Length: 595
Image 1 (cartoon, rainbow, N blue to C red):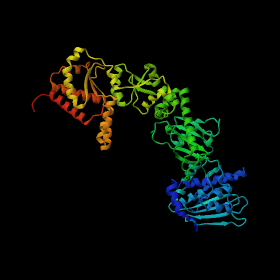
Image 2 (cartoon, rainbow, N blue to C red; image 1 turned 135 degrees about the vertical axis):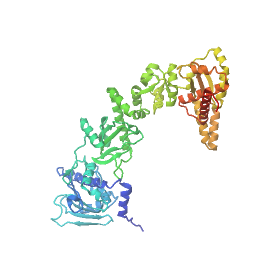
Image 3 (tube, one colour; image 1 turned 90 degrees about the vertical axis):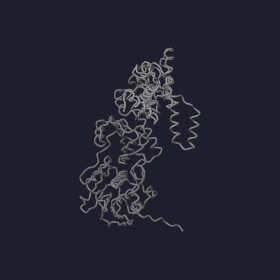
Image 4 (cartoon, helix red, strand yellow; image 1 turned 180 degrees about the horizontal axis):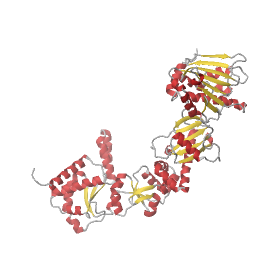
Protein backbone atom coordinates (compact mmCIF):
# COMPACT_ATOMS: atom_id res chain seq x y z
CA UNK A 1 0.00 0.00 0.00
CA UNK A 2 1.28 3.46 -0.91
CA UNK A 3 1.65 6.11 1.76
CA UNK A 4 1.91 9.90 1.52
CA UNK A 5 4.89 11.81 2.88
CA UNK A 6 4.07 13.80 5.99
CA UNK A 7 5.69 17.26 6.04
CA UNK A 8 6.55 18.92 9.35
CA UNK A 9 6.24 22.60 8.44
CA UNK A 10 8.17 23.69 11.54
CA UNK A 11 11.03 21.46 10.41
CA UNK A 12 10.85 22.92 6.90
CA UNK A 13 11.01 26.45 8.34
CA UNK A 14 14.02 25.48 10.44
CA UNK A 15 15.68 24.08 7.30
CA UNK A 16 15.02 27.32 5.42
CA UNK A 17 16.31 29.56 8.18
CA UNK A 18 19.51 27.66 8.86
CA UNK A 19 20.48 26.23 5.48
CA UNK A 20 18.73 27.96 2.58
CA UNK A 21 18.32 31.64 3.36
CA UNK A 22 21.27 33.69 4.54
CA UNK A 23 19.18 35.91 6.81
CA UNK A 24 15.56 36.39 7.97
CA UNK A 25 15.62 39.77 6.20
CA UNK A 26 14.59 38.02 2.97
CA UNK A 27 10.99 37.99 4.21
CA UNK A 28 10.61 41.60 2.97
CA UNK A 29 11.95 40.63 -0.45
CA UNK A 30 9.52 37.71 -0.75
CA UNK A 31 6.54 39.85 0.26
CA UNK A 32 7.52 42.48 -2.31
CA UNK A 33 8.06 39.79 -4.92
CA UNK A 34 4.58 38.32 -4.46
CA UNK A 35 3.01 41.79 -4.48
CA UNK A 36 4.78 42.84 -7.70
CA UNK A 37 3.87 39.55 -9.41
CA UNK A 38 0.23 40.07 -8.46
CA UNK A 39 0.31 43.60 -9.90
CA UNK A 40 1.99 42.31 -13.08
CA UNK A 41 -0.72 39.66 -13.47
CA UNK A 42 -3.52 42.20 -13.06
CA UNK A 43 -1.98 44.69 -15.48
CA UNK A 44 -1.76 41.97 -18.13
CA UNK A 45 -5.57 42.25 -18.50
CA UNK A 46 -6.07 45.73 -16.99
CA UNK A 47 -3.19 47.93 -18.24
CA UNK A 48 -4.51 50.94 -16.35
CA UNK A 49 -4.81 49.15 -12.98
CA UNK A 50 -3.02 50.83 -10.05
CA UNK A 51 0.49 49.61 -9.19
CA UNK A 52 1.20 50.19 -5.52
CA UNK A 53 2.47 48.31 -2.49
CA UNK A 54 1.90 49.78 0.96
CA UNK A 55 3.68 48.33 3.99
CA UNK A 56 2.42 49.17 7.47
CA UNK A 57 4.95 48.32 10.22
CA UNK A 58 3.76 47.53 13.77
CA UNK A 59 4.10 51.17 14.84
CA UNK A 60 1.55 52.05 12.17
CA UNK A 61 -0.89 49.17 12.64
CA UNK A 62 -0.96 49.58 16.41
CA UNK A 63 -1.57 45.89 17.10
CA UNK A 64 2.01 44.62 16.82
CA UNK A 65 1.53 43.14 13.34
CA UNK A 66 3.02 44.09 9.98
CA UNK A 67 0.70 44.45 6.98
CA UNK A 68 1.48 44.54 3.27
CA UNK A 69 -1.26 45.80 0.92
CA UNK A 70 -1.01 45.43 -2.85
CA UNK A 71 -3.25 46.39 -5.77
CA UNK A 72 -2.60 43.12 -7.57
CA UNK A 73 -4.85 40.53 -9.15
CA UNK A 74 -5.75 38.76 -5.92
CA UNK A 75 -6.72 35.08 -5.52
CA UNK A 76 -9.89 33.04 -5.64
CA UNK A 77 -10.69 30.45 -2.99
CA UNK A 78 -9.46 27.62 -5.24
CA UNK A 79 -6.23 29.47 -5.96
CA UNK A 80 -5.68 30.07 -2.26
CA UNK A 81 -5.78 26.33 -1.62
CA UNK A 82 -3.47 25.61 -4.55
CA UNK A 83 -0.96 28.40 -4.06
CA UNK A 84 -0.77 29.08 -0.34
CA UNK A 85 -1.13 25.58 1.06
CA UNK A 86 1.14 23.52 -1.20
CA UNK A 87 4.91 23.28 -1.25
CA UNK A 88 6.86 22.18 -4.32
CA UNK A 89 3.93 21.47 -6.70
CA UNK A 90 4.30 23.48 -9.89
CA UNK A 91 1.74 21.96 -12.29
CA UNK A 92 -1.25 23.82 -10.89
CA UNK A 93 0.70 27.09 -10.84
CA UNK A 94 1.37 26.61 -14.55
CA UNK A 95 -2.31 25.94 -15.23
CA UNK A 96 -3.35 29.01 -13.25
CA UNK A 97 -0.85 31.21 -15.05
CA UNK A 98 1.34 32.06 -12.06
CA UNK A 99 4.67 30.87 -13.45
CA UNK A 100 4.78 33.16 -16.44
CA UNK A 101 8.10 34.58 -17.63
CA UNK A 102 7.46 38.14 -16.50
CA UNK A 103 6.91 37.12 -12.88
CA UNK A 104 9.69 37.45 -10.32
CA UNK A 105 8.79 34.16 -8.65
CA UNK A 106 5.82 31.88 -8.12
CA UNK A 107 2.87 32.82 -5.99
CA UNK A 108 2.83 31.29 -2.57
CA UNK A 109 6.25 29.67 -2.27
CA UNK A 110 7.89 32.89 -1.12
CA UNK A 111 5.28 33.28 1.59
CA UNK A 112 6.87 30.33 3.36
CA UNK A 113 9.92 32.45 4.16
CA UNK A 114 7.75 34.73 6.29
CA UNK A 115 7.62 31.95 8.88
CA UNK A 116 11.26 32.85 9.57
CA UNK A 117 9.99 35.87 11.48
CA UNK A 118 6.27 35.16 12.06
CA UNK A 119 4.29 32.52 13.93
CA UNK A 120 1.11 33.36 12.05
CA UNK A 121 0.40 34.68 8.54
CA UNK A 122 -2.99 36.10 7.55
CA UNK A 123 -3.94 36.71 3.94
CA UNK A 124 -7.01 38.66 2.86
CA UNK A 125 -7.40 38.57 -0.92
CA UNK A 126 -9.94 39.30 -3.62
CA UNK A 127 -9.82 38.39 -7.31
CA UNK A 128 -12.04 40.36 -9.70
CA UNK A 129 -15.71 39.99 -8.76
CA UNK A 130 -15.08 36.91 -6.62
CA UNK A 131 -15.73 37.15 -2.90
CA UNK A 132 -12.94 38.04 -0.49
CA UNK A 133 -11.05 35.04 0.89
CA UNK A 134 -9.38 34.87 4.33
CA UNK A 135 -6.46 32.47 4.74
CA UNK A 136 -4.65 31.99 8.04
CA UNK A 137 -1.52 29.87 8.29
CA UNK A 138 0.46 28.82 11.38
CA UNK A 139 4.10 27.79 11.67
CA UNK A 140 3.10 24.33 12.92
CA UNK A 141 1.44 23.54 9.57
CA UNK A 142 -2.19 24.33 10.32
CA UNK A 143 -4.18 26.65 8.08
CA UNK A 144 -7.78 27.75 7.73
CA UNK A 145 -9.72 29.28 4.83
CA UNK A 146 -12.90 31.30 5.09
CA UNK A 147 -14.91 33.17 2.47
CA UNK A 148 -16.36 36.56 3.41
CA UNK A 149 -20.08 37.06 3.05
CA UNK A 150 -21.34 39.03 0.08
CA UNK A 151 -20.82 42.75 0.60
CA UNK A 152 -18.06 42.18 3.17
CA UNK A 153 -14.28 42.07 2.78
CA UNK A 154 -12.10 44.06 0.35
CA UNK A 155 -13.77 46.62 -1.85
CA UNK A 156 -11.13 46.34 -4.61
CA UNK A 157 -9.09 43.46 -6.03
CA UNK A 158 -5.77 42.89 -4.33
CA UNK A 159 -4.21 41.25 -1.31
CA UNK A 160 -3.29 42.17 2.26
CA UNK A 161 -0.73 39.99 4.04
CA UNK A 162 -0.49 40.34 7.83
CA UNK A 163 2.42 38.92 9.81
CA UNK A 164 2.19 38.21 13.54
CA UNK A 165 5.82 38.45 14.72
CA UNK A 166 7.57 35.70 16.59
CA UNK A 167 8.71 36.78 20.07
CA UNK A 168 12.39 36.67 19.05
CA UNK A 169 11.94 38.55 15.75
CA UNK A 170 10.81 41.99 16.87
CA UNK A 171 13.98 43.63 15.52
CA UNK A 172 13.01 42.66 11.98
CA UNK A 173 9.73 44.60 12.24
CA UNK A 174 11.10 47.92 13.50
CA UNK A 175 10.10 50.72 11.11
CA UNK A 176 13.69 51.83 10.24
CA UNK A 177 14.61 48.20 9.48
CA UNK A 178 11.59 47.65 7.26
CA UNK A 179 12.29 50.92 5.39
CA UNK A 180 15.94 49.95 4.85
CA UNK A 181 15.02 46.46 3.61
CA UNK A 182 12.32 47.75 1.29
CA UNK A 183 14.81 50.22 -0.21
CA UNK A 184 17.52 47.60 -0.45
CA UNK A 185 15.46 45.00 -2.29
CA UNK A 186 12.90 47.12 -4.10
CA UNK A 187 14.44 50.50 -4.91
CA UNK A 188 14.33 49.85 -8.68
CA UNK A 189 10.90 48.18 -8.83
CA UNK A 190 8.49 49.64 -11.41
CA UNK A 191 5.74 50.07 -8.80
CA UNK A 192 5.13 52.56 -6.01
CA UNK A 193 6.34 50.99 -2.73
CA UNK A 194 5.84 52.83 0.56
CA UNK A 195 6.53 51.97 4.18
CA UNK A 196 4.07 54.07 6.10
CA UNK A 197 4.36 57.42 4.33
CA UNK A 198 7.98 56.87 3.26
CA UNK A 199 8.52 56.09 -0.46
CA UNK A 200 11.21 53.45 -0.99
CA UNK A 201 11.38 53.19 -4.79
CA UNK A 202 13.72 55.48 -6.69
CA UNK A 203 12.59 54.87 -10.25
CA UNK A 204 14.35 53.13 -13.14
CA UNK A 205 18.02 52.08 -12.99
CA UNK A 206 20.57 54.88 -13.52
CA UNK A 207 22.21 52.99 -16.40
CA UNK A 208 20.88 52.73 -19.98
CA UNK A 209 18.26 50.00 -20.32
CA UNK A 210 17.71 50.27 -24.09
CA UNK A 211 20.31 50.25 -26.90
CA UNK A 212 21.41 53.66 -28.10
CA UNK A 213 20.47 55.49 -24.92
CA UNK A 214 23.22 57.92 -23.89
CA UNK A 215 25.10 57.21 -20.67
CA UNK A 216 24.59 59.66 -17.82
CA UNK A 217 28.09 59.36 -16.38
CA UNK A 218 27.64 61.92 -13.56
CA UNK A 219 24.55 60.03 -12.35
CA UNK A 220 26.41 56.71 -12.40
CA UNK A 221 29.36 58.19 -10.53
CA UNK A 222 26.94 59.57 -7.91
CA UNK A 223 25.35 56.11 -7.68
CA UNK A 224 28.75 54.48 -7.06
CA UNK A 225 29.64 57.10 -4.47
CA UNK A 226 26.34 56.75 -2.59
CA UNK A 227 25.80 52.99 -2.83
CA UNK A 228 29.29 51.52 -3.19
CA UNK A 229 31.39 54.05 -1.27
CA UNK A 230 33.91 55.14 -3.90
CA UNK A 231 34.39 57.30 -6.99
CA UNK A 232 35.12 54.84 -9.83
CA UNK A 233 38.14 55.13 -12.07
CA UNK A 234 35.81 54.74 -15.02
CA UNK A 235 32.26 53.66 -15.89
CA UNK A 236 31.47 51.06 -18.54
CA UNK A 237 27.86 50.35 -19.68
CA UNK A 238 27.07 46.64 -20.07
CA UNK A 239 24.53 44.82 -22.20
CA UNK A 240 23.91 41.13 -22.92
CA UNK A 241 20.62 40.88 -24.86
CA UNK A 242 20.31 37.08 -24.67
CA UNK A 243 20.33 37.31 -20.87
CA UNK A 244 18.10 40.39 -20.85
CA UNK A 245 20.96 42.05 -19.01
CA UNK A 246 21.76 45.73 -18.74
CA UNK A 247 23.97 47.42 -16.21
CA UNK A 248 27.29 49.03 -15.57
CA UNK A 249 30.81 48.00 -14.62
CA UNK A 250 32.57 50.37 -12.24
CA UNK A 251 36.35 50.20 -12.63
CA UNK A 252 37.79 50.23 -9.11
CA UNK A 253 39.97 53.25 -8.26
CA UNK A 254 42.40 51.37 -5.99
CA UNK A 255 44.33 48.09 -6.23
CA UNK A 256 42.61 44.95 -4.97
CA UNK A 257 43.78 41.43 -4.26
CA UNK A 258 43.43 39.43 -7.50
CA UNK A 259 42.66 36.31 -5.49
CA UNK A 260 39.68 37.95 -3.78
CA UNK A 261 36.44 37.34 -5.61
CA UNK A 262 34.58 40.57 -6.30
CA UNK A 263 30.92 40.60 -5.22
CA UNK A 264 28.56 42.10 -7.78
CA UNK A 265 25.14 43.64 -7.21
CA UNK A 266 22.59 41.73 -9.28
CA UNK A 267 18.90 42.53 -9.81
CA UNK A 268 16.47 40.14 -11.45
CA UNK A 269 13.58 41.99 -13.11
CA UNK A 270 14.60 45.01 -11.00
CA UNK A 271 14.35 43.15 -7.66
CA UNK A 272 17.67 42.87 -5.84
CA UNK A 273 18.91 39.29 -5.86
CA UNK A 274 22.22 39.75 -4.06
CA UNK A 275 24.88 42.32 -3.30
CA UNK A 276 27.67 39.74 -3.57
CA UNK A 277 27.10 37.67 -6.69
CA UNK A 278 30.09 35.51 -7.57
CA UNK A 279 31.03 34.32 -11.04
CA UNK A 280 29.40 37.11 -13.04
CA UNK A 281 32.75 38.18 -14.54
CA UNK A 282 35.83 36.18 -15.53
CA UNK A 283 38.38 35.83 -12.73
CA UNK A 284 40.85 38.16 -14.44
CA UNK A 285 38.39 41.08 -14.30
CA UNK A 286 38.77 41.51 -10.54
CA UNK A 287 39.25 45.26 -11.05
CA UNK A 288 35.58 45.72 -12.09
CA UNK A 289 32.52 45.86 -9.84
CA UNK A 290 29.23 45.29 -11.66
CA UNK A 291 25.69 46.42 -10.94
CA UNK A 292 23.31 44.74 -13.37
CA UNK A 293 19.66 43.87 -13.93
CA UNK A 294 18.70 40.73 -15.87
CA UNK A 295 15.50 39.03 -16.92
CA UNK A 296 16.74 35.65 -18.15
CA UNK A 297 19.40 34.56 -15.63
CA UNK A 298 18.19 31.99 -13.15
CA UNK A 299 18.46 32.38 -9.37
CA UNK A 300 19.26 29.55 -6.99
CA UNK A 301 16.56 28.13 -4.74
CA UNK A 302 17.31 30.68 -2.05
CA UNK A 303 17.20 33.53 -4.61
CA UNK A 304 20.45 34.82 -3.16
CA UNK A 305 22.86 33.79 -5.95
CA UNK A 306 22.94 33.02 -9.67
CA UNK A 307 22.44 29.48 -10.93
CA UNK A 308 25.45 28.22 -12.87
CA UNK A 309 24.23 27.17 -16.33
CA UNK A 310 25.17 27.68 -19.98
CA UNK A 311 23.47 31.09 -20.10
CA UNK A 312 25.46 32.37 -17.14
CA UNK A 313 28.65 31.04 -18.78
CA UNK A 314 27.83 32.84 -22.03
CA UNK A 315 26.96 36.00 -20.10
CA UNK A 316 30.26 35.88 -18.24
CA UNK A 317 32.16 35.59 -21.52
CA UNK A 318 30.20 38.44 -23.11
CA UNK A 319 30.82 40.75 -20.16
CA UNK A 320 34.52 39.83 -20.25
CA UNK A 321 34.64 40.74 -23.94
CA UNK A 322 33.09 44.14 -23.21
CA UNK A 323 35.61 44.92 -20.49
CA UNK A 324 38.45 43.79 -22.73
CA UNK A 325 37.08 46.03 -25.51
CA UNK A 326 37.13 48.99 -23.12
CA UNK A 327 40.82 48.37 -22.46
CA UNK A 328 41.62 48.17 -26.16
CA UNK A 329 39.76 51.43 -26.84
CA UNK A 330 41.62 53.08 -24.00
CA UNK A 331 44.95 52.00 -25.51
CA UNK A 332 44.01 53.39 -28.92
CA UNK A 333 42.42 56.67 -27.90
CA UNK A 334 43.70 57.64 -24.44
CA UNK A 335 47.17 56.18 -23.69
CA UNK A 336 47.70 58.48 -20.72
CA UNK A 337 44.54 57.21 -19.08
CA UNK A 338 45.55 53.64 -19.87
CA UNK A 339 48.91 54.19 -18.15
CA UNK A 340 47.05 55.41 -15.05
CA UNK A 341 44.85 52.32 -15.11
CA UNK A 342 47.80 49.97 -15.53
CA UNK A 343 49.55 51.49 -12.54
CA UNK A 344 46.53 50.44 -10.47
CA UNK A 345 45.42 47.16 -12.05
CA UNK A 346 48.30 45.77 -14.08
CA UNK A 347 47.96 42.30 -12.56
CA UNK A 348 44.49 41.83 -14.02
CA UNK A 349 45.57 42.94 -17.48
CA UNK A 350 48.64 40.71 -17.38
CA UNK A 351 46.55 37.75 -16.26
CA UNK A 352 44.26 38.30 -19.24
CA UNK A 353 47.26 38.69 -21.57
CA UNK A 354 48.34 35.13 -20.75
CA UNK A 355 45.44 33.91 -22.89
CA UNK A 356 44.37 36.88 -24.99
CA UNK A 357 46.43 38.15 -27.93
CA UNK A 358 44.91 41.63 -27.90
CA UNK A 359 45.80 42.10 -24.25
CA UNK A 360 49.31 40.75 -24.85
CA UNK A 361 49.81 43.41 -27.52
CA UNK A 362 48.57 46.01 -25.04
CA UNK A 363 51.04 44.84 -22.38
CA UNK A 364 53.85 44.70 -24.94
CA UNK A 365 53.21 48.28 -26.06
CA UNK A 366 52.22 50.00 -22.84
CA UNK A 367 53.31 48.25 -19.63
CA UNK A 368 56.67 49.67 -18.37
CA UNK A 369 59.00 46.95 -17.11
CA UNK A 370 62.08 47.11 -14.92
CA UNK A 371 65.36 46.54 -16.81
CA UNK A 372 69.03 47.12 -16.05
CA UNK A 373 69.03 49.97 -18.59
CA UNK A 374 66.02 51.82 -17.19
CA UNK A 375 62.24 51.44 -17.25
CA UNK A 376 61.04 50.43 -20.72
CA UNK A 377 58.09 48.70 -22.31
CA UNK A 378 58.87 45.40 -24.03
CA UNK A 379 58.27 47.04 -27.40
CA UNK A 380 60.76 49.81 -26.59
CA UNK A 381 63.29 47.32 -25.24
CA UNK A 382 62.98 45.20 -28.38
CA UNK A 383 63.37 48.24 -30.61
CA UNK A 384 66.60 49.32 -28.86
CA UNK A 385 68.24 45.97 -28.22
CA UNK A 386 66.63 43.51 -30.63
CA UNK A 387 66.84 40.43 -28.42
CA UNK A 388 64.76 40.33 -25.22
CA UNK A 389 67.14 38.83 -22.70
CA UNK A 390 65.41 38.33 -19.36
CA UNK A 391 66.06 37.16 -15.82
CA UNK A 392 63.26 34.87 -14.70
CA UNK A 393 63.45 35.66 -10.98
CA UNK A 394 63.86 38.79 -8.95
CA UNK A 395 66.89 37.39 -7.10
CA UNK A 396 68.55 36.44 -10.39
CA UNK A 397 68.02 39.97 -11.72
CA UNK A 398 69.37 41.58 -8.56
CA UNK A 399 72.40 39.34 -8.70
CA UNK A 400 73.30 39.90 -12.33
CA UNK A 401 71.76 43.22 -13.47
CA UNK A 402 74.69 45.51 -12.66
CA UNK A 403 77.31 43.07 -13.93
CA UNK A 404 75.34 42.44 -17.14
CA UNK A 405 74.98 46.21 -17.73
CA UNK A 406 78.74 46.61 -17.33
CA UNK A 407 79.19 44.00 -20.07
CA UNK A 408 76.69 45.82 -22.33
CA UNK A 409 74.06 43.13 -21.81
CA UNK A 410 70.53 44.61 -21.49
CA UNK A 411 68.33 42.44 -19.26
CA UNK A 412 64.62 42.61 -18.44
CA UNK A 413 63.53 41.85 -14.89
CA UNK A 414 60.86 39.18 -15.44
CA UNK A 415 60.70 38.19 -11.80
CA UNK A 416 57.33 39.81 -11.12
CA UNK A 417 53.99 38.03 -11.42
CA UNK A 418 53.23 36.78 -14.96
CA UNK A 419 56.21 38.62 -16.57
CA UNK A 420 58.21 35.53 -17.54
CA UNK A 421 55.14 33.82 -19.02
CA UNK A 422 54.24 36.94 -21.01
CA UNK A 423 57.73 37.31 -22.47
CA UNK A 424 57.84 33.63 -23.41
CA UNK A 425 54.46 34.00 -25.12
CA UNK A 426 55.52 36.92 -27.34
CA UNK A 427 57.06 34.74 -30.10
CA UNK A 428 53.72 32.94 -30.38
CA UNK A 429 52.13 36.29 -31.16
CA UNK A 430 54.94 37.49 -33.44
CA UNK A 431 57.52 35.06 -34.81
CA UNK A 432 60.01 37.86 -35.40
CA UNK A 433 60.37 38.43 -31.64
CA UNK A 434 63.60 36.94 -30.26
CA UNK A 435 63.82 36.07 -26.56
CA UNK A 436 66.49 34.44 -24.44
CA UNK A 437 66.57 33.67 -20.78
CA UNK A 438 69.74 34.98 -19.14
CA UNK A 439 71.99 32.12 -18.11
CA UNK A 440 74.50 33.17 -15.41
CA UNK A 441 77.24 31.35 -17.32
CA UNK A 442 76.56 33.71 -20.26
CA UNK A 443 78.34 36.43 -18.32
CA UNK A 444 81.61 34.55 -18.04
CA UNK A 445 81.93 34.52 -21.82
CA UNK A 446 81.89 38.32 -21.67
CA UNK A 447 84.57 38.55 -18.99
CA UNK A 448 88.15 39.15 -20.06
CA UNK A 449 90.72 36.46 -19.51
CA UNK A 450 94.05 37.31 -17.86
CA UNK A 451 97.44 37.60 -19.47
CA UNK A 452 98.94 34.07 -19.63
CA UNK A 453 101.95 35.13 -17.53
CA UNK A 454 99.69 36.68 -14.89
CA UNK A 455 97.46 33.62 -14.87
CA UNK A 456 100.48 31.35 -14.48
CA UNK A 457 101.63 33.34 -11.50
CA UNK A 458 98.21 33.02 -9.85
CA UNK A 459 98.15 29.22 -9.91
CA UNK A 460 99.42 28.77 -6.33
CA UNK A 461 96.81 31.23 -5.08
CA UNK A 462 94.03 29.49 -7.04
CA UNK A 463 95.09 26.11 -5.64
CA UNK A 464 94.92 27.45 -2.07
CA UNK A 465 91.58 29.16 -2.77
CA UNK A 466 90.13 25.98 -4.26
CA UNK A 467 91.16 23.97 -1.21
CA UNK A 468 89.42 26.52 1.03
CA UNK A 469 86.10 26.22 -0.85
CA UNK A 470 86.25 22.55 -1.81
CA UNK A 471 83.71 21.57 0.85
CA UNK A 472 81.31 24.19 -0.56
CA UNK A 473 81.30 22.48 -3.94
CA UNK A 474 82.38 25.71 -5.62
CA UNK A 475 84.95 26.30 -8.36
CA UNK A 476 87.19 29.37 -8.02
CA UNK A 477 88.19 31.27 -11.18
CA UNK A 478 89.71 34.70 -11.84
CA UNK A 479 88.54 37.00 -14.59
CA UNK A 480 88.66 40.74 -15.31
CA UNK A 481 85.28 42.48 -15.53
CA UNK A 482 83.32 45.57 -14.61
CA UNK A 483 82.22 47.06 -12.33
CA UNK A 484 85.61 47.35 -10.67
CA UNK A 485 83.95 47.86 -7.28
CA UNK A 486 82.59 44.29 -7.29
CA UNK A 487 85.28 41.93 -5.90
CA UNK A 488 83.54 38.60 -6.54
CA UNK A 489 80.48 37.13 -8.25
CA UNK A 490 78.84 33.82 -7.40
CA UNK A 491 77.34 32.21 -10.52
CA UNK A 492 75.04 29.19 -10.49
CA UNK A 493 73.83 27.61 -13.72
CA UNK A 494 70.20 26.51 -13.94
CA UNK A 495 71.30 22.87 -13.95
CA UNK A 496 73.25 23.42 -10.73
CA UNK A 497 70.29 25.21 -9.14
CA UNK A 498 68.04 22.31 -10.15
CA UNK A 499 70.50 19.84 -8.62
CA UNK A 500 70.48 21.82 -5.35
CA UNK A 501 66.68 21.66 -5.29
CA UNK A 502 66.82 17.91 -5.82
CA UNK A 503 69.29 17.55 -2.96
CA UNK A 504 67.09 19.62 -0.63
CA UNK A 505 64.03 17.56 -1.59
CA UNK A 506 66.01 14.31 -1.14
CA UNK A 507 66.76 15.22 2.47
CA UNK A 508 63.02 15.48 3.20
CA UNK A 509 61.75 12.56 1.10
CA UNK A 510 60.95 9.03 2.21
CA UNK A 511 62.90 5.99 0.95
CA UNK A 512 60.78 5.46 -2.18
CA UNK A 513 60.86 9.05 -3.40
CA UNK A 514 64.46 9.41 -2.27
CA UNK A 515 65.44 6.70 -4.74
CA UNK A 516 63.57 8.46 -7.54
CA UNK A 517 65.29 11.76 -6.75
CA UNK A 518 68.69 10.05 -6.58
CA UNK A 519 68.09 8.63 -10.05
CA UNK A 520 67.19 12.06 -11.40
CA UNK A 521 70.26 13.62 -9.83
CA UNK A 522 72.62 10.97 -11.22
CA UNK A 523 71.14 11.24 -14.73
CA UNK A 524 72.04 14.93 -15.04
CA UNK A 525 75.32 15.81 -13.31
CA UNK A 526 75.34 19.60 -12.87
CA UNK A 527 77.91 22.22 -13.65
CA UNK A 528 79.66 23.37 -10.49
CA UNK A 529 78.84 26.84 -9.19
CA UNK A 530 81.62 29.35 -9.76
CA UNK A 531 83.10 32.04 -7.55
CA UNK A 532 84.44 34.47 -10.14
CA UNK A 533 87.04 36.78 -8.55
CA UNK A 534 87.46 40.15 -10.23
CA UNK A 535 91.15 40.81 -11.00
CA UNK A 536 90.35 44.48 -11.65
CA UNK A 537 89.30 44.94 -8.04
CA UNK A 538 92.20 46.30 -5.91
CA UNK A 539 91.27 44.18 -2.88
CA UNK A 540 91.26 40.97 -4.92
CA UNK A 541 94.67 41.77 -6.40
CA UNK A 542 96.04 42.30 -2.88
CA UNK A 543 94.52 38.99 -1.75
CA UNK A 544 96.20 37.16 -4.63
CA UNK A 545 99.61 38.31 -3.35
CA UNK A 546 99.17 36.73 0.07
CA UNK A 547 101.61 33.94 0.86
CA UNK A 548 100.05 32.64 4.09
CA UNK A 549 97.79 29.71 3.07
CA UNK A 550 95.60 30.14 6.16
CA UNK A 551 95.06 33.83 5.45
CA UNK A 552 94.33 33.10 1.80
CA UNK A 553 91.69 30.62 2.92
CA UNK A 554 90.06 33.11 5.30
CA UNK A 555 90.03 35.86 2.66
CA UNK A 556 88.56 33.65 -0.06
CA UNK A 557 85.91 32.33 2.33
CA UNK A 558 84.97 35.91 3.21
CA UNK A 559 84.69 36.86 -0.49
CA UNK A 560 82.58 33.77 -1.07
CA UNK A 561 80.20 34.76 1.75
CA UNK A 562 79.91 38.33 0.49
CA UNK A 563 79.14 37.10 -3.04
CA UNK A 564 76.37 34.87 -1.66
CA UNK A 565 74.84 37.77 0.24
CA UNK A 566 75.09 40.29 -2.60
CA UNK A 567 73.57 37.79 -5.03
CA UNK A 568 70.64 36.99 -2.69
CA UNK A 569 71.53 33.31 -2.79
CA UNK A 570 70.16 30.94 -0.13
CA UNK A 571 72.54 30.49 2.80
CA UNK A 572 72.94 26.84 3.81
CA UNK A 573 74.00 25.82 7.29
CA UNK A 574 77.51 25.03 6.00
CA UNK A 575 77.70 28.46 4.35
CA UNK A 576 76.65 30.18 7.57
CA UNK A 577 79.32 28.30 9.50
CA UNK A 578 81.93 29.26 6.88
CA UNK A 579 80.89 32.93 7.03
CA UNK A 580 81.16 32.90 10.80
CA UNK A 581 84.58 31.21 10.89
CA UNK A 582 86.05 33.48 8.18
CA UNK A 583 84.80 36.62 9.93
CA UNK A 584 86.19 35.57 13.30
CA UNK A 585 89.43 34.37 11.70
CA UNK A 586 90.02 37.68 9.87
CA UNK A 587 89.06 39.62 12.99
CA UNK A 588 91.54 37.56 15.00
CA UNK A 589 94.28 38.36 12.46
CA UNK A 590 93.35 42.05 12.49
CA UNK A 591 93.50 42.29 16.30
CA UNK A 592 96.73 40.48 17.33
CA UNK A 593 97.70 39.98 20.95
CA UNK A 594 97.47 37.59 23.82
CA UNK A 595 94.31 36.73 25.74
